[in-house]
Image 1: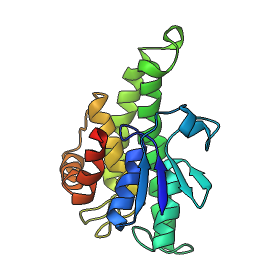
Image 2: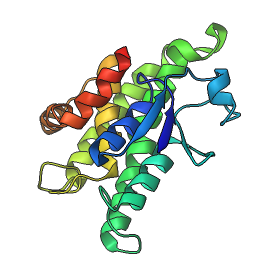
Image 3: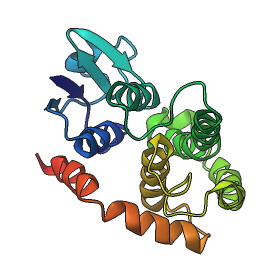
Image 4: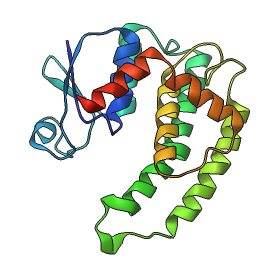
Length: 198
């Protein structure tokens, strides 16, 4: 039994979604970042946390990778060229999508008000749009990021596109908008999102 700690309105959604895709049993502890429930397992206070037999795993990408490897689904085998390509796409999404959106969030409501730079969001939107064009050239020909098979980068990308819409970062590539619609239509995604309301 897995225990997932974190709120659905955070990167915790990625982990819940993966567990729903896997059909795995888990318990969800709805705890806000820096709350006592989180700090007990992650001194940094960040979510999500996945607890397995008392051992915590932090960082959503590390958790997704662990789950995919442990269940042998949504990933390519370690040591293969396809896994190298998968990991490369994962890192690209973290560097170019997730990092820009996280920086925008920090300067919108996370940092103390006197440290926020509202003008930074213009350059972040510019980078985000440019990164979309780059990603389109790296995507496979199928309905998922790598082609015909859903993998870890799909969960990261779809969540980042959710986040982009909330942050008013335009999705300028039509192919990504269509992709996003397909991913949000997945039953496992819908089940994970409904946990927002408890």
